[in-house]
Length: 254
Image 1 (cartoon, rainbow, N blue to C red):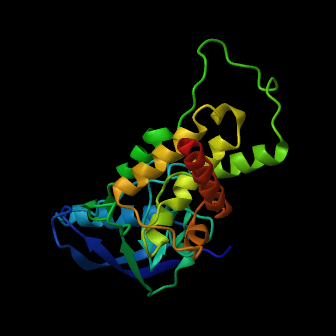
Image 2: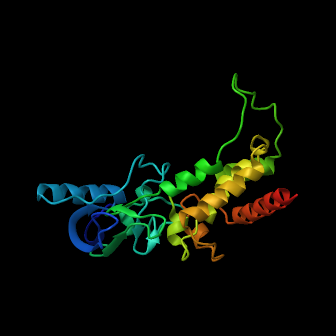
Image 3: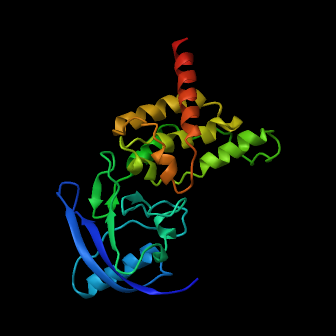
């Protein structure tokens, strides 16, 4: 693939804290390699700002390998940018053209208040997990992996749901800021396995209640969440979540 350099205009959201009104600022970056990752490009900008005695852009990152989901940015109106099935750290600058203006924003959701610039507080997702995303197991030696037979289709569906990295792109893409895809993935991957059976009913009831408490909106059924999910989590999990919730509600009424 041909390597080239480019000059870009970056419109970046700057905000001191959640009380600050915030606004866009424009920056110029030059001689950006097409083979750089998006975060490496931001590193170059921050080095430039620091050298000019200016406050660098605050953005979240950790593994830079598409695993942790920390690098959540809204790029040109799309969570994680243009590439499908991709986190921001996996987005490379060859996705852009020389002279292009790139708009970079934080996630926009009531439940995700801005901490600073492009960093938002995604601890509501952690609290949803804490409400029920666990299983009860006996302590001691690990059980042999083959001792519990599991239907292959269920195992495959569980592993596919478990790929969710909790980045919040589904929330950012949804016009109601719903966390249903995230929650459904966390509920489904445990509900499909026998190890998740003991808390099956309490799990879904408690996690849904926590999701509502955190201020996330209702599912819009538009599929924007699935379309922007970097791990391509299927919205079929939302149907499974609804079934699990209905089953738990009926059991609670008996």
